[in-house]
Length: 460
Image (cartoon, rainbow, N blue to C red; front, side, top):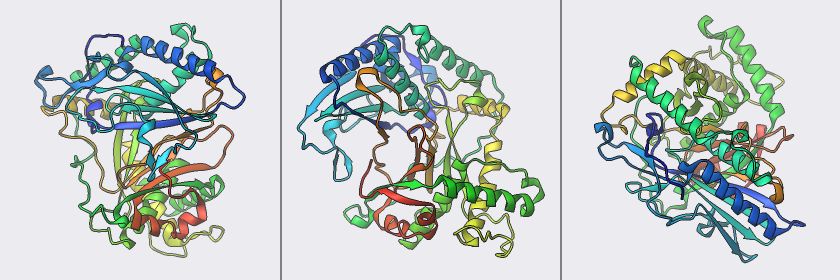
């Protein structure tokens, strides 16, 4: 692996609990020269890690760096224990999933990770099953967020199309990433601290008996009707404009936030119906990208996401059912009111993340003695939007990505709005809940009206 000087992770990187994110890009190699495709992928991967050396490095405890506790840094890999790209061919009968989870044979690196030791930033594995190629990426979440993973895919695909692409024509460079990190470090050290907008919570897993199938995490993928979401959004806009408190009537929101509010409500009442209400509160935790407020471009690869918590049981509107109804919608006035109230709780909190506040937030994080003291966690439903990330690239000899998936959530209470192929209007939503709660969710009238299950029993 290429070597590079050690680099301190930013204060925002330290908000992330040490963990890995995985993505699966699937290609159809029928009618293609398989050997040439794999050869090009290997060359492109080698060019990628040469171009961005930190991708081949490790995330490692920084020791006494700056006299901070639980600090991490990027450093060159101590050895080549895990190749940057592995290529494995599997028998045609090899399943991608085993008991609902990604087959360990398809995943690069060690199955069990000790985060107190140096851990790879990124590793790739190309899995050949007949005429199908599953390219699995496994990235350390403290070094790369979802947008960072998208930049990796865009760069790799460009190098697959043309391995001799000039560095200046690629989405980013190592020097640019260092400049952006230095920008964040300067901002953190020079800004007047401001209060954080979230309450640090330890990452607690509900003490459930995991031998009981009712408590085992199940994942479902839903197709969500874009047309019906637009209708709900229009109804919410009219109700909020006419009936919200005066200071909230100018609230504006995206379809993604409408989906987040809707699935948050559905999952909360599913857990209540399943008898899990004592462990999970009526909260929705939204992953919020603050690159713009930080003065960073979309190509910044480190973490620039905060968790914004809102209440699912807020009471901002009158409970008058006649006012809060829309005869043209196939949902109840109670559900419509719940979505509106959730949006009225969430949107003002998103607005609080102004450029000046974000700078002050970095100042507060920089002053902490323990870098892990305010890590973001969740106790309700965590909602992440990757819908507009472009994972469907053309990889030259491999062809275009046919599908992109995020392997199933190991922990319940996580929801992803997934990227979809260009030209596809409807949304795809992946939800992970306890088995008992998932059974209740599948019967939820609101969710059934806006969507349908795409893949039952699957974690992809």
